[in-house]
Length: 129
Image (cartoon, rainbow, N blue to C red; front, side, top):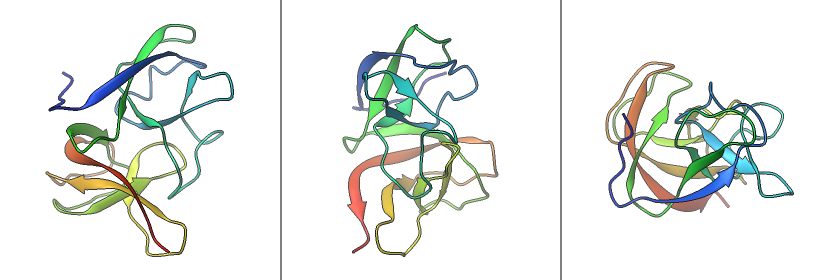
């Protein structure tokens, strides 16, 4: 079940089959379509939002955008409540790094293990200088 609290979402077509990427970070390609996974994302890098539903290529997908609301994210590692998170190259959430250029996307409200889906506060970009 989707869990959003005051989060905004935009609807864009899926560039690829996103059925395995629900609740993972995503980015828009040059045509404005949604992509996720290791071919498009950079660890600790920029994202457009989170894939809100599991859809196939060409179907409109809601993309939850960072606006300070509460959303859900799939974890890529075991993380505790209160952890600052960033994106892994595969779109799952990992611990935010402290290296120049690393981007923090939010704070976990609940902790969990890899591949668990947990709520977090989706903050606007905070980049380590």
